[in-house]
Structures are given as C-alpha cells and as structure tokens.
Length: 156
Image (cartoon, rainbow, N blue to C red; front, side, top):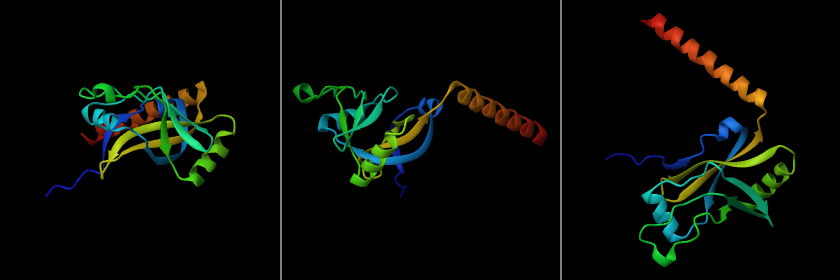
C-alpha cells in the first residue's frame, strides 16, 4: 500500500523569497466555503500578490484569487474576497507585535492540502529586502552554480 503524501501543493508564491527575508513560518488554516474548496481541488489559486494583516485580533488574507467553481452556480463567492486565517490567539498577538516593527510583513508562501485533506496556508513573517540584498542573493546563487558545475566536471 502506498503512503499518503505529506501534502498536496495547490499554489506557491515563488516571488516571496526574492522580495522578503523570511524569518519565521506559521502553518494556519483558512476559512473557506464549500464551493471554494471544490474549486481548489479542480485548479490552482493565485497567491502571488497576496498579503496578510491583523485587524481586531483576527488575521485576514487579502488579495488571494480562487477561481469560481464550475458547477457552483449561485453558491459561488466573490473570488477576491478577504478570507480569515485560523491561528491561535498567542500566535496572533505575537505576529501583531512583530508587525508593528517597521519593515515586517506577513507573506503567504504556499497553499496546500494537508494529509487530512484540509486546506492550509504556510505564512511567513518576513522583512522586505533592499536592492543590494537581492543582488547579494543572486551573486551567491551564481557562485553555488559555478561550484556545482566545477564539481560535476571534475567527477567526469
């Protein structure tokens, strides 16, 4: 019998690590309607221009687009509505204190189904990168690539 995968990825924010230095990650649930979950099983959602904020001791996800479910009809919700994130009170108060510091942001990194079939969001607490930080990262990647090429050539 095959083992169930750890999680099934729905969508990934590929630009998050380029724009932010991620210091901590949090796994949180997301409050969705039934047609939204069915739509996520059909096709991917878009989380690239998405961010999270905290208002009235609740965490909200803003800007995520879930395509309307093909068989949803009148039960389909607005694809771009705000969605509440499900976190513990201690986590929300911790994140709220961190977000009050200048430069921090809550960035969604990945949306996936966990092994129980529930939709989860990997949320990263990150600091915005400056242009020179991005150049530094690109230079490190180039050096690592050159080292890997040299090792490959040497092993031949």
